[in-house]
Length: 391
Ligand SMILES: *[C@@H]1O[C@H](CO)[C@@H](O)[C@H](O)[C@H]1NC(C)=O
Ligand SMILES: *[C@@H]1O[C@H](CO)[C@@H](O)[C@H](O)[C@H]1NC(C)=O
Ligand SMILES: *[C@@H]1O[C@H](CO)[C@@H](O)[C@H](O)[C@H]1NC(C)=O
Ligand SMILES: *[C@@H]1O[C@H](CO)[C@@H](O)[C@H](O)[C@H]1NC(C)=O
Ligand SMILES: *[C@@H]1O[C@H](CO)[C@@H](O)[C@H](O)[C@H]1NC(C)=O
Image 1: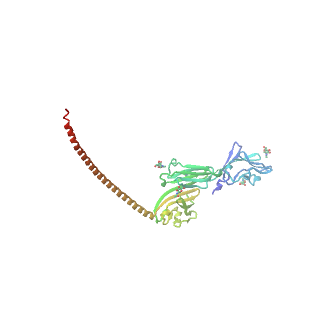
Image 2: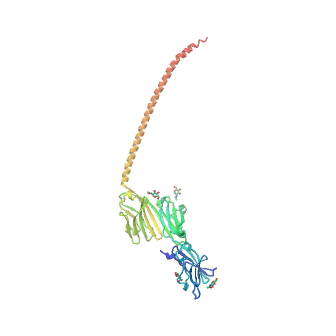
Image 3: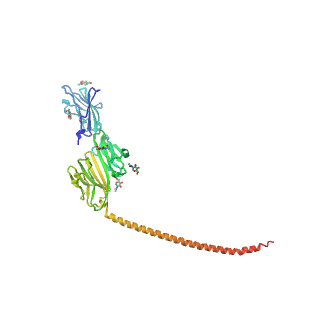
């Protein structure tokens, strides 16, 4: 780690004309580490009076009577004060340590120091969450960093629309989470998430590629994975996830060229690994046990890359069951058809016999009507016969 890179040293001297050439120094202090704010003066043999201020509040002073600490052990002088080194040692920097400091020696302002505080990015994580979103995150960062997403091949940045949350965690640091929806042609894309520190001193990159494959039980299987192009030294872990449980399968380190495995029937060709091919060889997988998600995860300098393969292994028993199931379905369908046919025939027969019955009834009615007529007629005749004699 290039921790000294962030360290407590002079970054820039700016000569302020207004303050009559009192120099201003910028220092970046690392969260929870010690930090030195520089101040030097030309020593003389008289009395020495040194004062340090943070935003115009006096925090530490050294007077002829001796050293006075105004705030426990938060601020200390260097051991070299008599030789002209009035630098301030800030112990265990926290977010309140930032600000503008002033170093005054014998009533003359020597230096202004502008201290910024940074809790550097130390990890990045990327994964799919149960709802299918892709989640990129980091923890304990200060100040709040910038998250950027992209895809390969490129899609319009406006189409991505990620949702980013920066929540204050303990001690004023930030926990960062960013969610991206999977794009439609998800299987042909790599999702890339960059987290850049506020002052641009660091960029961590994470990527996720999703792929799918299927195979049959008992057949050796190669799950492909290649080292990303610009990843020099890395550690690699293959894991297996099924029913929300993740187990380690195999580990590989590019510096030692050695792999160690947790599964007996899984291996990686170390010769191929040197050429960037870290595919997993799975010997005689069993469908029910070995179907699931295989993740090939690289961790390198400021980078994490995941290739997630959803593997479906069809088992023999599944095949047999499938046939059985089909026969059952066939039987049921044939049964239904027969039943339907019988119902139709019966219905038709019933309709026919009903019609016959109705015809018979109709005939009977007609007959009874006819007979009624014949019964009425003689009466009418008698009536007629009687009528012509009204006189
Ligand atoms: C002043 O003292 C600090 C702390 O002891 C030390 O790190 C720094 O190098 C010294 N500066 C000079 C100019 O000697
Ligand atoms: C600094 O200033 C104070 C009053 O403002 C004075 O009493 C003191 O003698 C001065 N010290 C030096 C070293 O000039
Ligand atoms: C994904 O598909 C839906 C409907 O098919 C469409 O409305 C949407 O714009 C597509 N999104 C992308 C990013 O292509
Ligand atoms: C993410 O970071 C990488 C490496 O620093 C850089 O090449 C890439 O352009 C960055 N992508 C975005 C979207 O900022
Ligand atoms: C996995 O966990 C999620 C929520 O954490 C749950 O909704 C899902 O049912 C679980 N799946 C299995 C197979 O246990």
